[in-house]
Length: 290
Image (cartoon, rainbow, N blue to C red; front, side):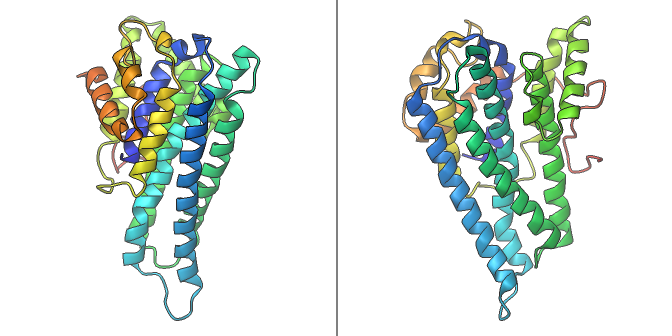
């Protein structure tokens, strides 16, 4: 499963945030365990790969080359794009626990987020100081980092309307600004169409420019399956995107997750063009400005 699909899953979870937070049931402990285990395995793989690359820079006989960086690039893309779901899921778990007065999913989600932040910091340190990194590659990774950060701020901003989870945004102030924008749009004529257009814009910006395969597609699928399996079908009405049949299929093996996500996205995908909100929607292509 490609890591870019996890961004789309994060957007769908955010869109259904009100229903998720209104649902009284806790995520099953075994699903939270699956999320923690798969995420920790992925973190360990990331850190080993980044450490191997750094060791190349410390050797005198052989220095990293642009070819080495090209092999590392899919890992850096996976770390940065996967961060969107990690933050959104941590925000939802925290908001849900706070509303119910428990500490059920938040500790696990926060633990994974802290590990993810360590991997992110190592990537950015390599981009700035690493040997053998072509300037073009460094610029591309930094552009992807900025794009993912802006999309995360927007998704968290939507959830801020339900519960103060702005601390989970890369830029909390910007997330609060997006929350204000969304409130304004929802009060205008046709405002109910704003969020579907935002989701369409996100999907359009996350379908190109990546490596063909994510290096840890198996763990991405397990993470997606554990997240989906944590959601009760009672959280969605008859027009929701994760209802009845979906919840039955979610209980199947993690290898089915990629097909479920693809079908879910097709069912929910609007045909509108991308929207730019009042403060400017996150950029979609490589020409995004700071």
